[in-house]
Image (cartoon, rainbow, N blue to C red; front, side, top):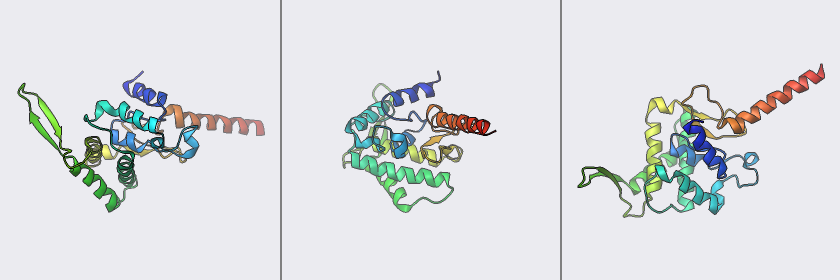
Length: 201
Protein backbone atom coordinates (compact mmCIF):
# COMPACT_ATOMS: atom_id res chain seq x y z
CA UNK A 1 0.00 0.00 0.00
CA UNK A 2 1.37 3.45 -0.95
CA UNK A 3 1.70 6.32 1.53
CA UNK A 4 -1.14 8.14 -0.26
CA UNK A 5 -3.42 5.08 0.06
CA UNK A 6 -2.47 4.70 3.71
CA UNK A 7 -3.26 8.39 4.38
CA UNK A 8 -6.59 8.06 2.57
CA UNK A 9 -7.50 4.99 4.62
CA UNK A 10 -6.85 6.91 7.88
CA UNK A 11 -9.23 9.69 6.78
CA UNK A 12 -11.88 7.23 5.59
CA UNK A 13 -11.71 5.26 8.83
CA UNK A 14 -12.39 8.50 10.68
CA UNK A 15 -15.48 9.57 8.70
CA UNK A 16 -14.02 11.52 5.77
CA UNK A 17 -14.45 10.11 2.24
CA UNK A 18 -11.19 11.67 1.07
CA UNK A 19 -8.07 13.14 2.65
CA UNK A 20 -4.32 13.02 2.66
CA UNK A 21 -3.92 15.19 -0.43
CA UNK A 22 -0.44 16.70 -0.95
CA UNK A 23 -1.95 20.13 -0.13
CA UNK A 24 -3.69 20.39 3.25
CA UNK A 25 -5.82 23.20 1.75
CA UNK A 26 -7.48 20.62 -0.54
CA UNK A 27 -8.25 18.41 2.45
CA UNK A 28 -9.96 21.37 4.11
CA UNK A 29 -12.07 22.11 1.01
CA UNK A 30 -13.09 18.45 0.78
CA UNK A 31 -14.69 18.46 4.24
CA UNK A 32 -17.93 19.38 2.43
CA UNK A 33 -19.51 16.90 0.05
CA UNK A 34 -22.68 16.35 -1.92
CA UNK A 35 -25.58 15.14 0.26
CA UNK A 36 -25.88 11.84 -1.64
CA UNK A 37 -22.30 10.97 -0.67
CA UNK A 38 -22.61 11.94 2.97
CA UNK A 39 -24.30 8.71 4.06
CA UNK A 40 -25.34 8.86 7.71
CA UNK A 41 -22.98 11.78 8.47
CA UNK A 42 -23.55 15.48 7.69
CA UNK A 43 -22.53 16.66 4.21
CA UNK A 44 -20.52 19.40 5.94
CA UNK A 45 -18.29 17.32 8.20
CA UNK A 46 -17.69 20.40 10.35
CA UNK A 47 -21.38 20.33 11.41
CA UNK A 48 -20.36 17.44 13.67
CA UNK A 49 -18.18 18.79 16.51
CA UNK A 50 -16.46 15.42 16.89
CA UNK A 51 -15.54 15.27 13.21
CA UNK A 52 -14.39 18.90 13.32
CA UNK A 53 -11.94 18.05 16.13
CA UNK A 54 -10.92 14.80 14.44
CA UNK A 55 -10.02 16.58 11.19
CA UNK A 56 -7.67 18.99 12.98
CA UNK A 57 -6.11 16.08 14.83
CA UNK A 58 -5.55 14.15 11.58
CA UNK A 59 -3.88 17.20 10.00
CA UNK A 60 -1.88 18.21 13.10
CA UNK A 61 1.41 16.82 11.76
CA UNK A 62 1.19 19.27 8.83
CA UNK A 63 0.11 22.33 10.77
CA UNK A 64 1.73 24.60 13.36
CA UNK A 65 1.01 24.07 17.04
CA UNK A 66 -1.65 26.17 18.70
CA UNK A 67 -5.37 26.21 19.27
CA UNK A 68 -7.86 24.85 16.77
CA UNK A 69 -9.64 27.76 15.06
CA UNK A 70 -13.33 28.27 15.62
CA UNK A 71 -15.64 26.58 13.12
CA UNK A 72 -16.93 29.86 11.61
CA UNK A 73 -13.41 31.03 10.75
CA UNK A 74 -12.52 27.62 9.31
CA UNK A 75 -15.66 27.62 7.17
CA UNK A 76 -14.94 31.11 5.85
CA UNK A 77 -11.40 30.16 4.79
CA UNK A 78 -12.68 26.87 3.35
CA UNK A 79 -15.27 28.70 1.26
CA UNK A 80 -12.65 31.15 -0.05
CA UNK A 81 -10.29 28.30 -0.92
CA UNK A 82 -13.04 26.41 -2.75
CA UNK A 83 -13.67 29.50 -4.89
CA UNK A 84 -9.94 29.93 -5.63
CA UNK A 85 -9.47 26.27 -6.59
CA UNK A 86 -12.65 26.14 -8.68
CA UNK A 87 -11.57 29.31 -10.50
CA UNK A 88 -8.17 27.75 -11.26
CA UNK A 89 -9.80 24.56 -12.59
CA UNK A 90 -12.24 26.59 -14.71
CA UNK A 91 -9.49 28.97 -15.95
CA UNK A 92 -11.29 32.07 -14.73
CA UNK A 93 -10.50 34.89 -12.31
CA UNK A 94 -11.58 34.15 -8.73
CA UNK A 95 -13.87 36.47 -6.80
CA UNK A 96 -12.11 39.37 -5.11
CA UNK A 97 -13.79 38.41 -1.81
CA UNK A 98 -12.12 34.98 -1.86
CA UNK A 99 -8.72 36.50 -2.64
CA UNK A 100 -9.16 39.09 0.12
CA UNK A 101 -10.25 36.44 2.66
CA UNK A 102 -7.21 34.24 2.01
CA UNK A 103 -4.82 37.19 2.08
CA UNK A 104 -6.38 38.48 5.31
CA UNK A 105 -6.00 35.03 6.86
CA UNK A 106 -2.27 34.88 6.16
CA UNK A 107 -1.77 38.51 7.21
CA UNK A 108 -3.53 37.87 10.54
CA UNK A 109 -0.86 35.33 11.53
CA UNK A 110 2.35 36.07 9.65
CA UNK A 111 5.32 33.75 10.06
CA UNK A 112 8.97 34.55 10.64
CA UNK A 113 12.04 32.35 10.51
CA UNK A 114 14.21 32.26 13.60
CA UNK A 115 17.51 30.68 14.42
CA UNK A 116 17.75 28.76 17.69
CA UNK A 117 20.88 28.70 19.85
CA UNK A 118 21.37 25.11 18.64
CA UNK A 119 21.59 26.40 15.07
CA UNK A 120 18.20 25.01 14.02
CA UNK A 121 15.64 26.93 12.04
CA UNK A 122 12.34 27.58 13.79
CA UNK A 123 9.16 29.08 12.45
CA UNK A 124 7.27 31.52 14.63
CA UNK A 125 3.65 32.24 13.82
CA UNK A 126 2.64 35.69 15.03
CA UNK A 127 -0.87 35.32 16.42
CA UNK A 128 -0.66 38.29 18.80
CA UNK A 129 -3.53 40.05 17.03
CA UNK A 130 -5.92 37.11 17.10
CA UNK A 131 -5.01 35.29 13.90
CA UNK A 132 -4.97 31.49 13.65
CA UNK A 133 -1.61 29.91 12.86
CA UNK A 134 -3.35 26.78 11.58
CA UNK A 135 -5.61 28.68 9.16
CA UNK A 136 -2.73 30.93 8.09
CA UNK A 137 -0.65 27.84 7.29
CA UNK A 138 -3.50 26.35 5.24
CA UNK A 139 -4.03 29.63 3.37
CA UNK A 140 -0.26 29.85 2.72
CA UNK A 141 -0.35 26.27 1.43
CA UNK A 142 -3.08 27.27 -1.04
CA UNK A 143 -1.18 30.38 -2.15
CA UNK A 144 1.91 28.25 -2.77
CA UNK A 145 -0.09 25.75 -4.81
CA UNK A 146 -1.97 28.36 -6.86
CA UNK A 147 1.14 30.44 -7.60
CA UNK A 148 3.03 27.40 -8.94
CA UNK A 149 1.92 27.07 -12.57
CA UNK A 150 2.87 23.38 -12.82
CA UNK A 151 1.09 22.34 -9.61
CA UNK A 152 -1.95 24.51 -10.35
CA UNK A 153 -2.34 22.68 -13.68
CA UNK A 154 -2.76 19.42 -11.71
CA UNK A 155 -5.87 20.63 -9.86
CA UNK A 156 -8.90 18.51 -10.73
CA UNK A 157 -12.54 18.06 -9.81
CA UNK A 158 -13.69 14.45 -9.43
CA UNK A 159 -14.93 13.01 -12.75
CA UNK A 160 -18.17 12.01 -11.03
CA UNK A 161 -20.40 15.00 -11.82
CA UNK A 162 -22.40 14.38 -8.63
CA UNK A 163 -19.35 14.48 -6.37
CA UNK A 164 -17.43 17.76 -6.59
CA UNK A 165 -14.39 16.77 -4.49
CA UNK A 166 -11.11 18.38 -5.53
CA UNK A 167 -7.65 16.82 -5.73
CA UNK A 168 -4.16 17.24 -7.11
CA UNK A 169 -3.65 14.78 -9.98
CA UNK A 170 0.03 14.01 -9.49
CA UNK A 171 -0.73 10.80 -11.40
CA UNK A 172 -2.03 12.07 -14.78
CA UNK A 173 -4.40 9.07 -15.04
CA UNK A 174 -6.21 9.95 -11.82
CA UNK A 175 -9.79 11.05 -12.45
CA UNK A 176 -11.64 10.17 -9.24
CA UNK A 177 -11.49 11.74 -5.78
CA UNK A 178 -10.84 8.22 -4.48
CA UNK A 179 -10.83 4.97 -6.45
CA UNK A 180 -12.70 3.19 -3.67
CA UNK A 181 -15.44 5.86 -3.60
CA UNK A 182 -16.29 7.40 -6.98
CA UNK A 183 -14.05 4.99 -8.90
CA UNK A 184 -16.06 2.06 -7.50
CA UNK A 185 -19.35 3.81 -8.23
CA UNK A 186 -18.27 4.27 -11.87
CA UNK A 187 -17.21 0.62 -12.16
CA UNK A 188 -20.51 -0.59 -10.68
CA UNK A 189 -22.48 1.70 -13.03
CA UNK A 190 -20.52 0.43 -16.07
CA UNK A 191 -21.12 -3.19 -15.00
CA UNK A 192 -24.84 -2.53 -14.48
CA UNK A 193 -25.16 -0.85 -17.90
CA UNK A 194 -23.31 -3.73 -19.63
CA UNK A 195 -25.56 -6.25 -17.92
CA UNK A 196 -28.66 -4.26 -18.89
CA UNK A 197 -27.52 -4.07 -22.53
CA UNK A 198 -26.77 -7.80 -22.63
CA UNK A 199 -30.15 -8.72 -21.17
CA UNK A 200 -31.90 -6.47 -23.73
CA UNK A 201 -30.39 -8.50 -26.65
